[in-house]
Image 1 (spheres, rainbow, N blue to C red):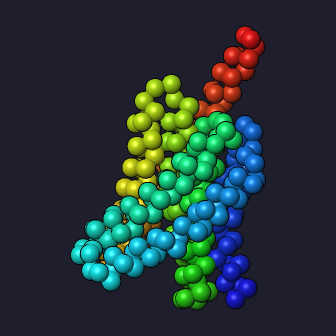
Image 2 (cartoon, one colour):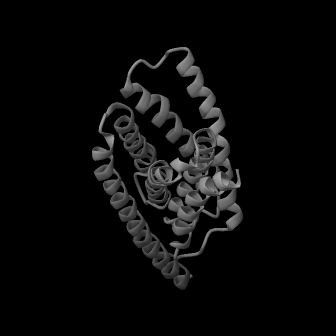
Length: 227
């Protein structure tokens, strides 16, 4: 059991540390990061219940609806909701890159609990595949969500547009990911290039968020020097 818990927790914590330590402009309070991680962890259980109801009531009738509604819509909306109300509105969210830290934290909390439950039910032999696919993909969906939240909070205009994109783009990417898994026989041949694209996109957003944070820091410095 200890081995399963270690294998279930390690990928999420490793990825969270990676994105957390990439913050160059004022590292976020560890208490805030832990809090958002735990909220993401607890989110698994109500979502599992809703998905169970949808399944037992036979409400979802196609792979497309299953991927985009039963899974992606539920998971990304509630993750977005938690990031928005526990981090985005908080005063510690004080530069654009913070969105990536908190988006990744909530998503990896969710992915970690989900990963532990899966390994308990199915065995340790799935640990590597789970780390490379579900845990990594959740982290990247969170990074992309956080990038647009950070851009929205510190944008001088079109705040609503960035908030919409912060949900819409992870929702679409997550739906595509799940649709590949549940509808394709040889899904691995499609999933490999999709995951490469997802990593490229996520790391590109990290780089852009660093640029936005640097620009914001310069603006703040100039503003205070004029006071």
